[in-house]
Amino acid sequence: MTTTTLTKPVSVQTGGEFAVQQPRAVERLVVGQATSDGAGVKLTRVLTHDLQQRLDPFLMLDAFGTDNPDDYIGGFPNHPHRGFETVTYMIAGRMRHRDSAGNEGLLQNGGVQWMTAGRGVIHSELPEQEEGSMEGFQLWLNLAAKDKMTAPWYRDLQSADIPEFTTPEGVTARVIAGASHGVNGAMQREVTEPLYLDLHLEPGARFEQKLPASFNAFVYVYRGEVEIGDTKVPVQRMAILKNTAGSDGVVLRATDRPTRVLIIAGQPLKEPIAQYGPFVMNTQEEIFQAVRDFQSGRFKATA
Ligand code: CO
Image 1 (tube, helix red, strand yellow):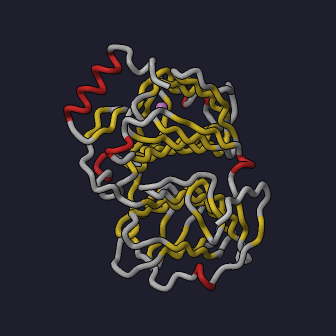
Image 2 (cartoon, protein in one colour; image 1 turned 45 degrees about the vertical axis):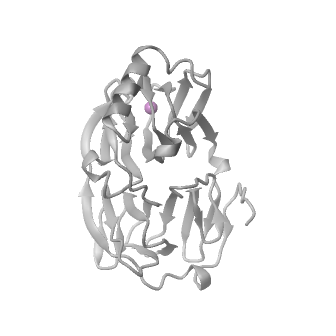
């Protein structure tokens, strides 16, 4: 397989090796919880704490979207992370990030920041606009126990760095991670093998995605509406997909309106999860250690 670095959508064929024979059904629909984080940023927590085991290796998904600057202007001042990865996908708006290792970048319209917190990073994420809309997602992806204390790392992906393709049926797919219809995404990860797709569907358009039955997977609708089997999934709902033995993917179809969805899937780690705020480890002792390391300033020395 070669690495795809497409900057413009290409047309691809569906069917053939990409056809799904045994599609997964929806196990349940989830409504996110309205909350705020950072310095008063209003957001919807779609993947909440109680779903961490079910959707292993994913720990959290926040959706933010507003035209009101009061909802986002405070941003996320300096805060630490340890033990997992954060994937921030900006649909609209501009956010500047800075971290304790001296890195800095601007995340904007259609771009992604992939950050591996590993053994520890302190960073800030602050809006670089005082008006207009701000919309996007932050996903937390767990690290395997053996990788939790790895060196911090991050990569900024501009919108043009994210491979896209368009199907004959009227679906444009942005492949942030993993692979779809033979197109490799901008990021590949071992162990958890995450798939992260942003799909834009014309009314009535259908899309198939192969998925191993062992992968935990969900679909989040952020515009319009889709049908998955017999289940209608309205806007701002997450559909958790069943891990039916023998299933090989998901088939979804937009109803009568333009629709946008995320498909997110990954290989579960099946390891204990111990979380205290921005630290996600395997045991309580490791959490106490993270708090001690942070309080004694050891996060700043990393990287
Ligand atoms: Co953060």
